[in-house]
Image (cartoon, rainbow over all chains, first blue to last red; front, top):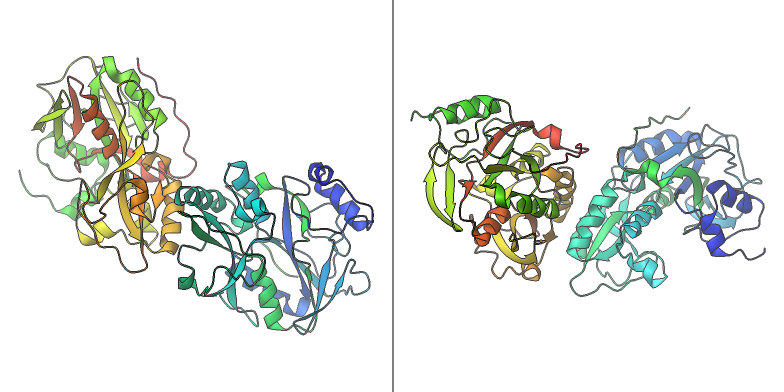
Length: 277
Length: 277
């Protein structure tokens, strides 16, 4: 694999980056690629469980904001991207058997089945982009690390076999900046929307803010408060807990880059009604 | 003055309540009257100073959200209310001379001048209405007292002789409710918009949260944080400090009830361009 200049990747369209990934020329965390395009979490599960999972997403729109759902077996997802082959257009996939990640693959051709339904869920990259555009500092980006994520004692609304605790991501801000961050992210319900909590970590069951369950710890400055958003890791944790015989997710950080513009999911986004065939 | 049933006043239109006030049949704090209509702060100043005050309001839209400005000497304010006589349609007015409140009157007929310009500024009643509609508790309303207000060390943007500290109002919430209150009030920029601060009072210069400069102290529960909004008392404090030879304001709590619907200033309100003749 040849090395590609990150600034070159930033200026590409989503379709251009997907083609590089599809051809095997690119396998890297996708943050910052195809600037302005929505990146997304991926959950691919057998049709047998898809109805319940759809209901779970609808009941928990903050951790699981639905950008699109495929027909069973289809490798495209309406409204998410043209020229999409979901089997090859993400850098890395995790294969789960009975809730356990057993393998990372870069292509789903060998494991694809006609009953697989693809769920495309919004991710925090979109609102982080909006925060930085507004001049707000995003700590983990400034630190060059992953966002810290924590399991909480807040419960998701269970549907069928899908249930479990809400996982949150944390970004510290001064109160004035936190208010701006809250208002900006509220305008992007398809990128997790407004936060679920700020301030005292213990009141949502986080024992040690310096030891996140996922990602990396970041410093919290004097006069800053931690602000907690519902996180796209929630559906992965829920899928693991549900222990489906077979499921696929993206390798964290290696997102599906969609053709949807960040601007298109900002403010008064049209309601889309999803169903499973 | 005969006593009027508060529930009757709540169900009236703005025009009906204004007619009662104009006829001298009603002089009471207007909170809860003409439910669903925007209530407003009032500042009436000589034309000589109106241009600077308009610039001050534009530069400080959070404490001074402009709903309307009159022509000099006019007793109506375009876009604010039909059938309006600004000299008689507010229960109580405060007359200021050289920045000092010298008198409360219920009618401006005797003091009216052809050079007076009326500024109508949004007030927090509108967003409090939205918070309560959403099921959020508003402490001072539940306590049956006035909202606590504090002078801060945050400065307004000065224009001409108009300058001074931002005054804020405070409502305590749990963090989850605070996030909802922030998002809801952000949708009403003409009712002070999103808060300016939450949490530590000292960081905006409030020494003792239990001793507000204006209004009444309210209890803050365990697990609650104080949330601070820019307050319509700011322009009154600024007007006093500017020490104009002559100025008029409403008697606090006795607001101008406009024909504007709360819904009309929620979310994507059309930008209105104001000027002073």
